[in-house]
Image 1 (tube, rainbow, N blue to C red):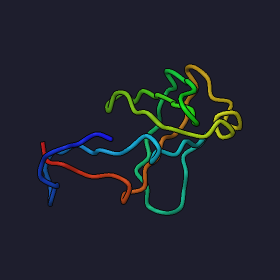
Image 2: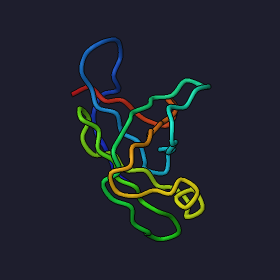
Image 3: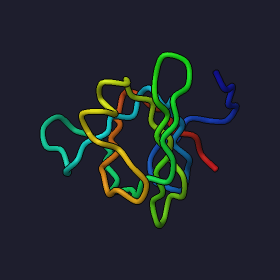
Length: 99
């Protein structure tokens, strides 16, 4: 776990969102349904680590984002280099800090 110090964001302004890779879901297409933060990414690496698979995607504006999925999910999605997928995080899964 990473410890972040800062003041939670309130209102408008710039900030940073912090969330664990296990909070990031991976979809082959843009998901619909409950409110989510979603970003199209290009897969840059897929590697098994511990009991899961770490998938690092690149977003043009946000840079690198890492998701942790199960081996079964990685296989079902057929994850590979340069694949375009959607990373999503439910709003309650992250913390916002003012920069």
